[in-house]
Image (cartoon, rainbow, N blue to C red; front, side, top):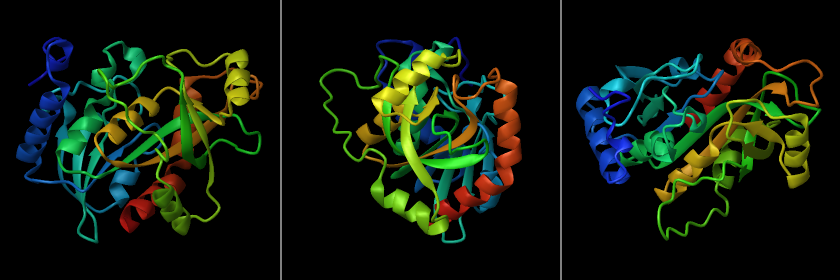
Length: 277
């Protein structure tokens, strides 16, 4: 069973794709499912969707899978689930996310995406809880990600891997999402390094750059998913207005509370979207 000390991705000489293949083999062995069709990373506030997607046929601790570690953030389940949808699709639900600010390196951040691709999944759904820059948005509102700005100064790509990020967040899947909820708004997601929340000046910078959503995940994962040839859908739950727009102090407790309050609505939305894939 891997742990934070002996994780093979800590070895700079390790091939991250070989480690991802080993993880996929672990997932197949532990879930008794040879191949998955869709992968879904559940961020803050999105956890209940796993109950609505279909029949859970296996749920395993992520720590039993090569390269995965324990969830470090309150609100993340720390498990992997294999779910069978009513339409016969296999969904791998990832409840264990490694954030960039944890300091484990980008390979660990994107390992879940690479492992999902190695299981056969061709669609990657990335969700998160985030701050909103648009004043028309309020806590509990789901928003589609139309594009991103990577402000981490990092990338999961190693060497001369020149990956096209045009239409990174699939237009087809965003259109599909709007067949479930036609009024869904969308915006550009800005990934900051964290773990501190953004300053008002940083939020103004993100707005000037064309950003609408600020958070601490997703962009690096999306790049890795594109490298793996996956089609990507991104969804943010607006848990609060960003610093300088919201006048009260920001807190993780606020993020968790907004997520809990919105769970019934956003979980049904996400389950509907996945069910239509």
